[in-house]
Length: 153
Image 1 (cartoon, helix red, strand yellow):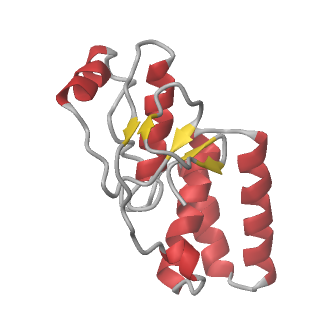
Image 2 (cartoon, rainbow, N blue to C red):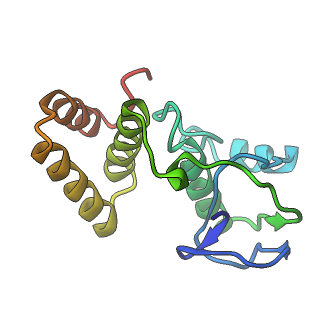
Image 3 (tube, rainbow, N blue to C red):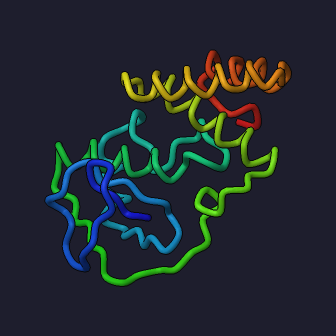
C-alpha cells in the first residue's frame, strides 16, 4: 500500500527522491539527523511532526512537510526494503475508535492542508455520519475541523 507517489504505490526499491508527492505511513521509517537539521533551519513554521494530530495523520502530515522542504533543499528519500505491516484500513472492519480517529485526521487535514479533494472527501464523510444519525460524532468532527487540531492536542 505504501509508500505512494501521486496516489499510486511505488513498485520499486531504491532512491525515490525525484518522485513527487511521496506519502507513506511512518512504520519502518528511519529519519536522519540531517533531515532534522534541515527542518530546524527553517524556523518556527517547520516542525518535524505536526502537533495538531494525535494518532492518525501524523505520518502523512510528516511526508507533506518533507515534500514542502524538498522544494527548498534537496532531501534524499530511499525505499530500501519492504515491511509487511497490518493496516487496519485494509482489513475493512473499523472499530468506532478508529472511525472517529480517521474522521478527526480528515477534518484536520482538510482544515490545515486545504484542497478540493480534501473538501470533497470531508463533505462526503460528514454527510455519511449525518445520515447514520450519529449526531455526537458529527458534532465532534465539526468541532475538530473548526479548531484545526485533535481534541487531545
